[in-house]
Amino acid sequence: MSPVTLQRPKSKPMMPGPAPVITTARLTLRPHRLSDAPAIAESLSDFAVTRMLARVPAPYDRQDALDWLIPVTSGVMPDWSLAITGSDDVHIGNVSIELRHGRWHLGYWLNRYYWQRGYMSEAAEAALERFSQRMPDIPVHSGVFADNPASLRLQEKLGFRMTGCSEIYSFARNTMVAHIETVLQPGALQQQKVA
Image (cartoon, rainbow, N blue to C red):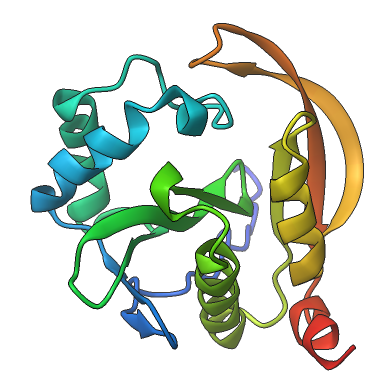
């Protein structure tokens, strides 16, 4: 007779639920559609955008966009990947909160022609606010390439704090790049808004 070992079932991590539609003063953040492929390909075929992203290859074309969109739009992933659109529903960028290696991670990009208008700050803050309503006790990790001070300023404005530095591979640059790691602790976004 062998002893029976009682094991607690492994608990599944909490999930935020399906990606929402979020409306801000100037933007609508919505789940992606397959019809967004041409706009995504146009934005990410610009090396000024892709050089700051770790996992996006260069050159980037419509098939790359479709390869990314099919799993994103399938509804089987726990991640939030939200299209950033204006009042005309034209896709101008992406803000995502993805589960990677057991941690939630903020990622984003914006078509270069919409830079320096505050759109990314508005979109990222709205996505993080909604995420924190659903997952109030969960830190959100992110990071920037060391040669992207604008993105680091955006994260600091949102309440992210630097936690370290490493090197990660950039597919667009085809090399290792210095990367600053950041984290937004639970409640830090609200504290930053009050300050």
